[in-house]
Image 1 (spheres, helix red, strand yellow):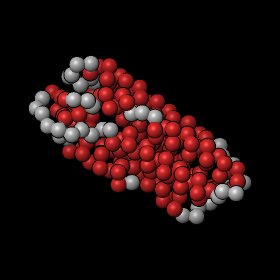
Image 2: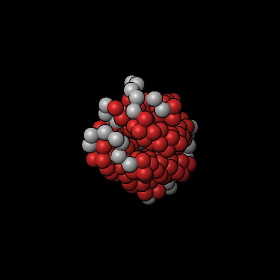
Image 3: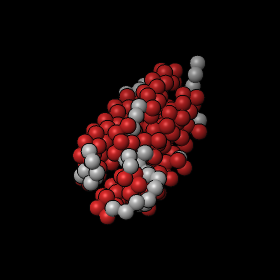
Length: 193
């Protein structure tokens, strides 16, 4: 019988892949467009606290998995972490939507696609929270099996793309975002988790 600890380690490994989605919100070069720089600053400043929330949720799950925690403690930690992640991705979507389209070709479509993607990720984490909340913590074997299923879905979620976010940050937009201090710290935060 596989206990909850090995399964929870799989959950933590899958979660660290989810942090890659947040890393997409950073760029790489330098250019000069004031309107675009202003847009990038708005987005980066709004996204940075959400990145931290996601990194903290990742860290909480990883800490819980390193202990020999009871199924009840694992369930409670995972549930809160998934809710925090769901809220953070929803807030990121709202921040991108509020910033509007970047002043580049196809900016509105890129923005709409990124918002749709962030909201879908938020919903997926909300669904994982419901699934974890529904697990039976009284039977360790059943709980471990349930966690295995959650870990599998989480793994798919972390591998499912951040294609719309990448498209949003192509070219000039990525360059403008890379200059923003809050985007630099947003991309540094999750990788530390």
